[in-house]
Length: 135
Image (cartoon, rainbow, N blue to C red; front, side, top):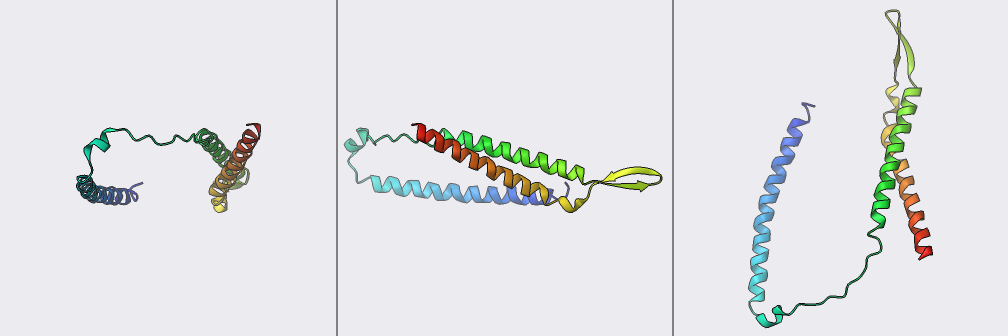
């Protein structure tokens, strides 16, 4: 944990410097937009501009996608843990039996999380496709 502290401090300092520069750049952009608008008649700005309203059908599907993705990632981690525990090897140390997990399955955790997360997204796709057929 102590090895990560300099990385986080450097990241926070870099983010702070970036935000300060972004603040000044946005300020200059706003000033240039105001200067360009000085040639526009104020009466045209008083009337509200009506844009057509489009209903986005994919708004409700994001909750399904994210939910199924998290369920899939959770299932992947659980299955990876079960496989990790089941591959433990008994080792005799000082007359006592200890179960030592084989660390060759370290790649199992991210791969299972990715595979089951992908399966969750595929299930979400089929649910949305079925919903679209219904509509």
